[in-house]
Amino acid sequence: MAKKSKKSKLPLAYKPIGFVLSWTGGTLAGLAFQKTWKVIRHEDDAPDALDRDRRWGEILLAAAIQGAIFAAVRSAVDRAGAKAIERSTGAWPVTDKEKGRD
Image 1 (cartoon, rainbow, N blue to C red):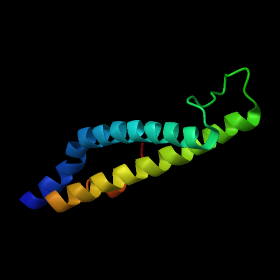
Image 2 (spheres, rainbow, N blue to C red; image 1 turned 135 degrees about the horizontal axis):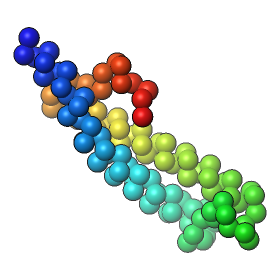
Image 3 (cartoon, one colour; image 1 turned 180 degrees about the horizontal axis):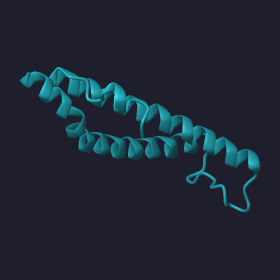
């Protein structure tokens, strides 16, 4: 019975760890995007949607690349964190009820 109680508390205990992992992942994704943009366009700054002097194509390309990098890094960081928690505790950090919630 004690094992079930420990497993039911794990998702709540994982929330602060998940927050730190998400923040770290976002930072890593931002750095990866900056480096990628510099390689692709040889520019230090990517265009922003409100940059008056940038063309639609540049803005949409930057947004698509940034979104893809962010999603990939976030998934990798979240998965690595969950696997580490599972290895150290024996329980997956997210319950079936919490899947898909942000």
